[in-house]
Image (cartoon, rainbow, N blue to C red; front, side, top):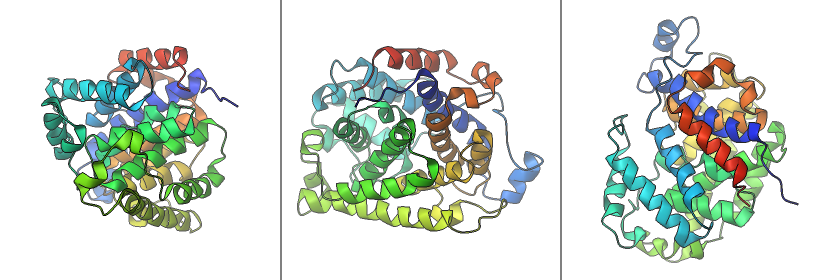
Length: 338
């Protein structure tokens, strides 16, 4: 049966991502938790600090526009719109928010034309692969959602773990939209990873496994899923432990500079307080890791589960790119991604 995300869930995913990005951006490169708490008394940031976002939100919007502009959700059409949007982002004067080296390099390669598999940075599994995938989580069809998530990652990050982590991020969003309860989420994602371990989506990925230097497609993709299964194990262990309020989630599932850790730690921050989105974002901000990406993902998970209405209403008027976020949210309501 087709499940359609509600307008509140669609807005929750898109705006929630941007809210997390803006709230945690000021702490991204601060590694002292004590300093973060002192600078944003009493216990870390809980507001948007003017609403300025980073490249995370900018690139999330490129993926949203690419999905909306694609005439069909098929590999060739989506690759074309993603390449176009990534190239526009590359030359955007506002692309001055400390963008990742991998994304910049791959986007320069993509604009030259030719096979995208030759443009990607094959050994990179940076978090840029999945801090932008959130709109793909709105796709209802399982195979299309997985293929689109992996393709948008692979255009810039060719490491198989980047693909698997992006797939898991989109899957987590869809499961929450579809009614999976937070306590069951980690187990459901582990089952998904196990089922997908040797599934190479050749229609979406072509021969990227050869550019990576793998012996065959199955060995390529299973390498990524095995790393993600490892971090999912750490996530499940963390959720069954006694995590103190002053603990750093990064100590449990990683700092988030790489894709599988960004996915797991962002999800952990949400799962620690699944009914309190501001606390989830604050928890991601008070870390030694890649705080804006962690909070960006935590915000998407919270938005998928709770909806846009769960966030402070005044944030909608404070967040940068508010009009574009509203436009994309409304367009996804009309163009249901089946």
